[in-house]
Image (cartoon, rainbow, N blue to C red; front, side, top):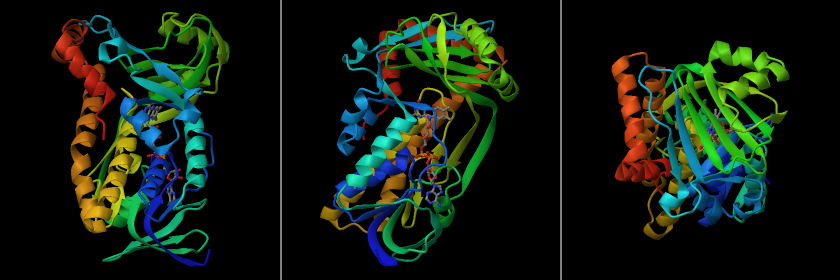
Length: 389
Ligand SMILES: Cc1cc2nc3c(=O)[nH]c(=O)nc-3n(C[C@H](O)[C@H](O)[C@H](O)COP(=O)(O)OP(=O)(O)OC[C@H]3O[C@@H](n4cnc5c(N)ncnc54)[C@H](O)[C@@H]3O)c2cc1C
């Protein structure tokens, strides 16, 4: 490739949101480049991706290769283990109440990114570069991007999928608000003796939820939200002591732990943006929103961002919309979904952390209503699965 090149669209960032955006945008026929520096570390997390995200993965052509490596979530069980004075009853949702298809599938992030990289590498109209954007300069009609190997790219529209520190967000002049939460998530996988029966169990504890998510076989991934101090203490325990505490916290629902994967710790924060796009730059994934890992919303939102921008780019070829109009439309369309989901996740998190009795009462009566009132259960299921794009 010569040192200078023009593209219809550039995706900056090769995480899961960026790669799926790149594939979907290239499928519209747009001449696309994706700046996707290979990650330095393997992501040991998993992602539960809801039905809408599975449809998006299907459209991108990556679902078939991942089905065997993922596990379906057929039942979601919530157990109020908050220790509060007012506690709710256990609540269980089964996918038979919602048409029978699993609510979601749980993927190892490393498998997901590998499959997306492979698909992106084969995709027509898509140039995949293993390097970062060193400078992003928006002009009136095009954006100039200089890469770390000194390529000069001229593009009509940029999709910033460059994570929570997002250089694209900065280049677009979009301000963001970050708040650090008093919690960290301890993340690891376990092999266990009892079958999970494709049930995802959420223990709603005072410091945050402890969630068990099925993986293929007798394996589960765990997201355990705690105070920073406790998460750090637990991370540093030896395997035997840790396994014992984990068994107590989860009331032995998985039986004995046969093997324990490496433990990683993620300090939690929120990030919200003024707008999900401005000028010629649209933001997708964590460049546009960071939410704590409660109710598996983060990447599901990111996939809906990716599908929406691709859809608008696809439609624009018929309607000759300018890149500026596409970005404006995108920011408008994504506003509600992003703000409602982020608001809901934060409300749930705060209700667990709260020592204020009326809040505890509201939470427990909310759970009682969810356990017993059918129309409310239907609304909750629809909200949990998320909208389709
Ligand atoms: C413990 C935990 C559990 C979670 N579980 C779930 C779940 O079950 N379901 C769910 O939906 N979500 C979940 N999430 C959220 C999910 O992990 C994130 O939403 C997702 O990983 C974000 O992907 P992304 O592509 O937006 O960002 P990232 O994965 O951060 O990717 C950003 C990429 O941009 C690249 N980049 C940065 N700067 C540049 C540059 N200048 N040029 C080029 N590239 C650049 C980086 O190298 C990186 O590869 C969880 C989060 C946590 C913390």
